[in-house]
Image (cartoon, rainbow, N blue to C red; front, side, top):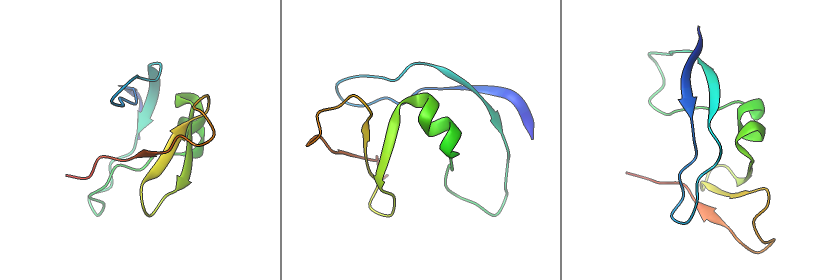
Length: 71
């Protein structure tokens, strides 16, 4: 673990979250970035459907859904 190694921000098409300083754990067996529930809450996001990548900011309208970027 590398404590306080990165500054994380969620960037959406119409807005960004606040910056959050986070620890990093590098797992050579994982190809995806994983975030903790703590970091999600600090970034102000709600993960609605994790497999499909559907989420929203906590202060979005109730019917506003966002989709994770998929390369």
